[in-house]
Image (cartoon, rainbow, N blue to C red; front, side, top):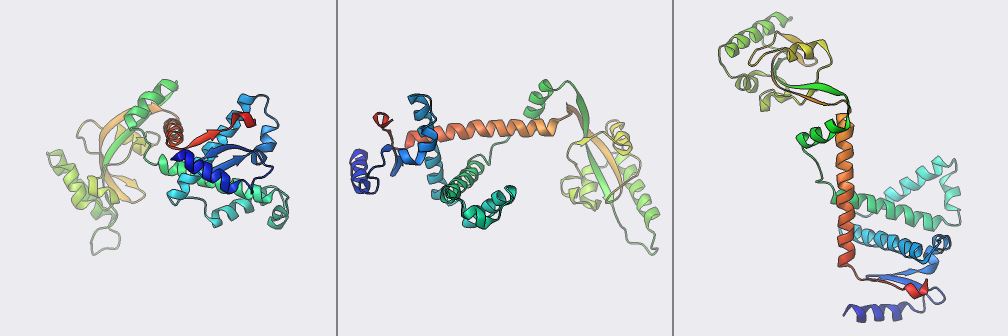
Length: 287
């Protein structure tokens, strides 16, 4: 059936492409020699030409899928990109539009944005766990930094008759500290009393690098020991140390690179599957 559809398609466009050799068919799209002539003319071998055509096929398939998912480049996105191109080349948008190959440039910009949108969509769930990242990144770095995870109870204000309630807050935190030292749940008190947004999960923070006096003080705490009162950007606080770890000194960048490389590999495999599902015909004799 695909062969019949292809034949009908070729017959219907034969008059349009008279004098312009069709070198490939991708689903219902024809790839002509003229559309790739500037690139093909610089190819050193037939294999190089096939690679160029194959790359064009990948572009067509990706743009088709982006349109199907309704995530293709919008007119506004294309216009913004063209404006940036004109600005980077120190010319006006009108001057760029007067460029003989402007329509080809506009099409290329639209395709690139569509493919970028598709890449983001397909790889949006690609990630890596903290432990996996630490394991990989620690092998790639000769230096590490220490990080700790803490839980905090932060009080920014308290009902009092006096305008300066700092002493009252300190007294309240000291009271909580004594109860916790006797066995009360820090997590429960944090959920009940902390005035910071972290209250909902017991005041637990993300991993914090040990790089200032306050964090070093918290790092020195033993198990279940409550810290002295300290000042934060959100108010006075007490805290306990939960965990510690050593990570690469460029851990964030290393983790991001791993995610990027994994996503790149995943997307490349996905494009290969896209090709397997498509009807593709390259006319080698026309090269």
